[in-house]
Image 1 (cartoon, rainbow, N blue to C red):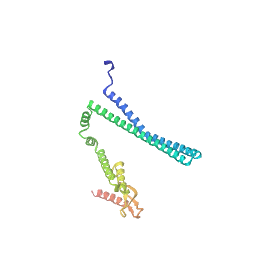
Image 2: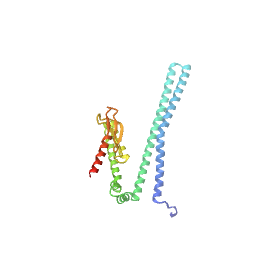
Image 3: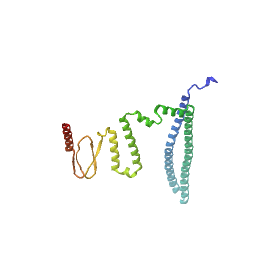
Image 4: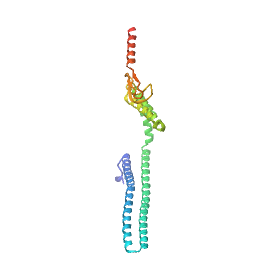
Length: 253
């Protein structure tokens, strides 16, 4: 009896079993999806050939028999075609339910195999210990601790963007408002572009409060003419004045 003992390791045995079950699930699921198409094509063929046979039968009966017999024969032919289509539909439903049940059983077996593997390898306990002592009690907090200050800041910004996106999806009115979407995308561009000074910011007209699709950099003076109301914005003079004041202050010191 010892010559026939399985020499494969525990993981190898479960890998082979799970691979076989997964293949069966994939093949059966694919067959179920294509089954409805095949039945629909068969139903169309039955309808086509049935109508053709009814037409030929009607012509033959009309030429050789009385109208009453012709009507009876035509009604019988139509009934036969309808019965055949109903039988095909019923047979497919029974077979489809059988395959759905089998697919459910295979998925249940797959899950049982996984649970048994976790039990035999103490996966849950081992995984919790590894996660706790390799990366801290909570991985998200430890990930932030291990990051430097700049990456940590970017991480927090992305987390905040994710929260805002969730809130935007839950609010249908804001989601349908182009301005609200533009504001959110502006924030995304700002976070992905790097620092705050190099982040492109939308230009909002101080007169009409409209955003016409233009952007600016905060560390550059703005020269802008609003296409909506025509007001001119020129920060060059203010920038030069600020520079001159700084120079004068340095001289007085």
